[in-house]
Amino acid sequence: MKRYLGERTGTGPEVTVDGQPIDEARDKHSYTKNEFEWSYEGPEPRQLAFALLLDHLGDVEAAKALSEDFMVEIVANFGNDWELTSDDMDEIIADLRA
Image (cartoon, rainbow, N blue to C red; front, side):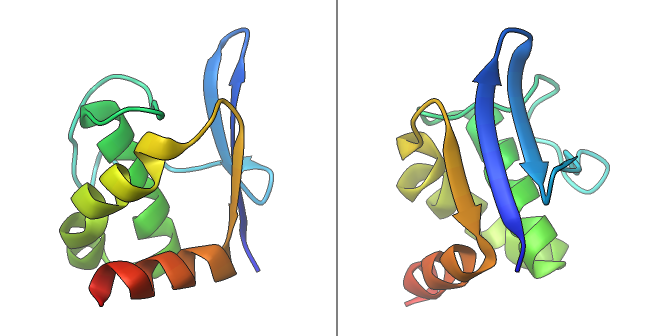
């Protein structure tokens, strides 16, 4: 099971999957050139939503299709530090698709 973590550090936001930096996936689709952000709605949180979805689903088109709703419902509501597991991702995606 994958574990996604986000935390705000002295050098800025850091997002990892299983302890490694997550691929920002800008080569697949780019909403912004800035670093990831969360706790609000905008292009930087949407890039994070897309990257999380792409890493979990492995499908660019599905990640694009879900990224707006995932950003609004989940990423915009993250606190400074957050954690999601693969199981969490499955539940969220099922809810968004319902």
